[in-house]
Image (tube, rainbow, N blue to C red; front, side, top):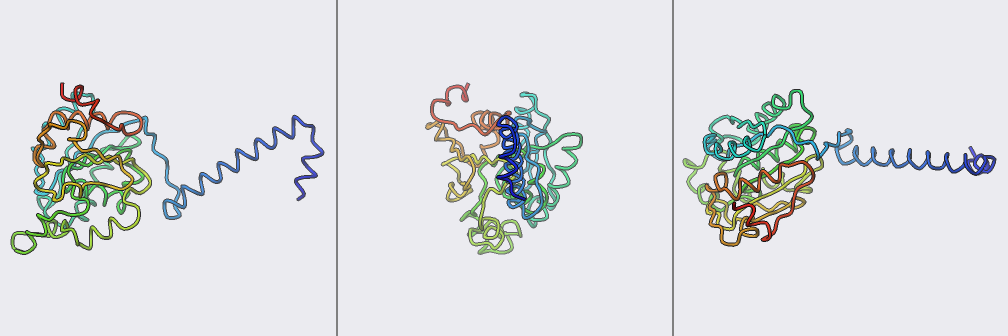
Length: 269
């Protein structure tokens, strides 16, 4: 078909209208193509960042759910519906199995809603990323917030691996050279779907080095980058008032919020 001749035969106003319709259709087709391409050939719904969902808290290595009670209470006081995920094998078994478990918990939490927000503490942040990559999390999660998560491993696990009897599967998978982390961090560390925020402390005494928590493509925030004088160890992350307020802020409607020293006073009060 010769579109040039067809357009030329139209009145100027109708020609402009037709061109506008064609442009909108082309843009829509391009958007769909990009979404399909980024999701491996399967169309993926774009989750509305202005509609926070229920919050799932994912425990760290050892699976302590009570260790997340203070953070859960803070978020509930802010009006959030919060559930603490229960992971198998006291969260010491295979991280992939933990991610599959999280998938079931997340589907149940999202019943009647469009999305969920996930906060992964320590190894729970690695589990959350595995869920996004392999078990449907990309279609369900609006936001992933990780707290002191050894996304690129920790030397403490590497030390533990020298004595296999004290370093079960999850421990070995958290060594910096593990096959699981190598695969997880190959390519895009924050794949399409949710938005990612990584919060960690430079005082972390478990994730070594602490900046193993840094994620390419995420909003990366150190506690000390906001409150320089804060003394927050690894176990303090889910109980620190400053960190709890940071998490609540990052789970609000809209995109993740960059933070600076100018925010320290309001986050400390």
